[in-house]
Length: 302
Image (cartoon, rainbow, N blue to C red; front, top):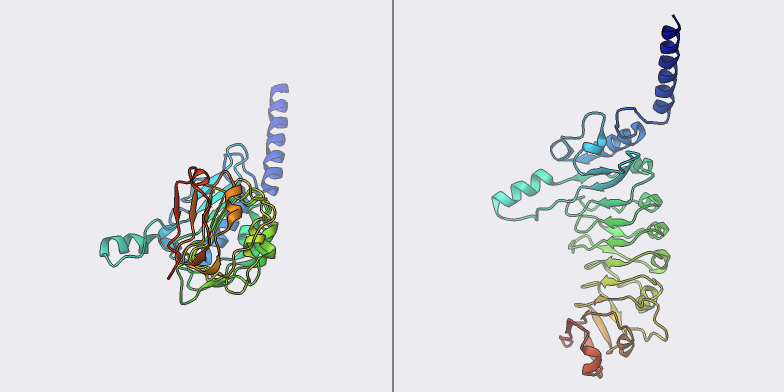
């Protein structure tokens, strides 16, 4: 009789625990949190092409769904990788692979329920000229954001400046008919953890000539890629260097008309410079400083 009472007590505790966990969006089977699973399904419902690409998004454990990764101990979602690895191609076989992987449609704010999300990659899809969602700036734990060649257009939202943990930002775009463009760079100076910036093809024509000064306020920046961004005017002369770990500087294919930036010789970490297809003049520093460079391209005159 006593054993039955003990067993009954344990069953009650188990039921109460299960109920409490369910209220918190948790389960006892190692599944992902209910609230996060529902958020992912809401996100999926806004997408076109998801029935093919995201056919694995069924069942209780969203940690096993394609493109989703979870933290081992807590099963919270930490990564969404829905990059399309195939290019659009005139070759039927490659095109068919691209088509089956392609996503478009709307990106709804269900992702805000993923409180631990640190990695988001939607690159290579065709979101048909939609704006980059402003709510991305509320994904406060993001460390990696890649929307490159994803079919986005319009102003890059300044709300991205709220992502103080972001280390890699890739918004590179080949959409010349509906380009992404920047209105100002002030918000970017808040990306205090940024190490790698790729914005090739994004229109910078409205930001003026102070873009280098803005980038110099990012102390951990190691790479920036701003090819074909319609940058114009002189390259700012920097009195002090804050991005002292800078390794790669790529601003080829713009409309820069400037003396060769002598201050670059003060960055000992730099290994690659591309200033090609601009209009630069003046003296390049001597061979001693050039010894550390892997490449330097200065096909300056159009």
